[in-house]
Amino acid sequence: MQQELSRPRRAPIRQAKRPRLLVLSALVALGLGAAASAHAFEYGPFSLTGFAKVNLGYVSNGCEGCQRDPAAGRQFVWADDLVYGKKYGGLTTDSVLFQPILGVKFDLPQGFKFSAAYSQRFRDGKADLPGVVYERSATLVHEYYGTVQIGNFLARGWNRPDFPYAYDLSQTAFSDSGAAYGILTKAMRYTSRPLYVADGNLVLEASYDQGDTNFKRNKPRLFEMWALWARGPLVVEAIAQTSRNGPPVAFAKAPFTGLTPFPERDDVLLNGSGQGMFMLLGKYQIGTAYEVSGGLRFNRWSGSYAVPVTQGALAQWNNPFNVDWGGVDANGVPNPGYPARSTDLLLGLRKYVNPKLEGYVSMTYLGKAKTANPSERGQSNSALFVSVGARYAIGGGLTVSGSLSAVGYARKGLAPLSMPAHNAFSNVDSRIANRGNWLSVDAFYLF
Image (cartoon, rainbow, N blue to C red):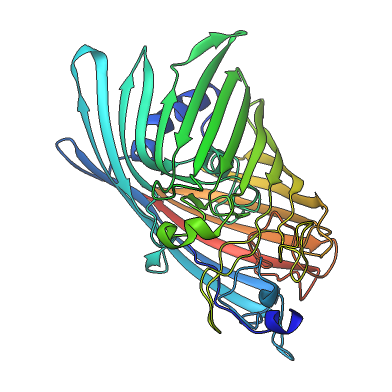
């Protein structure tokens, strides 16, 4: 068995508002999403909005091309090996993000409003998540009855911690990790109107996603609940997400689809898996100059057995998770996946220097995982990310920012289970160095 596993195999099949405006900002995001930004192009009911971002960075202890099988995801044992003798050190990075959003909206009788949006994000000229668009949805809004949305859109498990809790688009170690799915693909959502509860405004929301409906035996399903309560300078949010038979991942931007992209071939070969998370988020304004924020997330994965879905030297596998490679379960089934749980933490402080300039410090802790897996797959590691930065609004939708960040791993080896890759978020590979730092400069244009 060990000899068989040593052969490289094909990778898995992939797939600064003030507090009194925070509730309004959240409600705008419910129906129109990013289309609520300043309209750069409008023609009748149609609009074209979006953003473009350029990032330049320099990281210490970086290593480009250090993984022997660069196409393999981190859950595969043959992805653990590094290129022998490969040097690491200072590494320059750059990226370009571009996301246009095409929207349309109409006022209907009886106080109803209809809108639709189509959006895709591109990274360095290619689709950020190949095969999945960021939004393709239709929304019906009524001031009294609330909001109904159907289609393909962002889950709260990703987009709420991403904005406004990630102070900088480069600091996404909390929002982009963990057991949540970030993009709902065949979903329905209902959002209540603001309710007056405990001297504050309360918004409640429920979402359901059926994923890839071509799976008949391992049918995907996802439920998500979101609640936001705001009173004066305080905003508190709770998000719960539970799912079955999506692609097992620790990557909050992941789309919810099915166990693999090939249901007709793989449905009968695989057994189901599940994952979920519960998250608390909060913000508090101290006077007019400071804002503190934080987040606490509990992750849960069922684990996913590793199963070859095609045979041969270039065999394709399913998406495994937390596997005891080379081991067997109580029934003698090889390569079992084990359940795991972990806890992650976010803290931040923002300082409003003037209407155009703000500074911030932030910290993300990705904790060790509890699991019965006898093999080390990163459960014994943790990571601490810290950042200090500033942002300046030049005007006309253009903002520039810069940050100095550092990461420290509890040990050198496989990254914490909550991370999608061993060098995620920092380009400092936990297998090469247990600490590193990086400088990042961004230009962000919102149109």
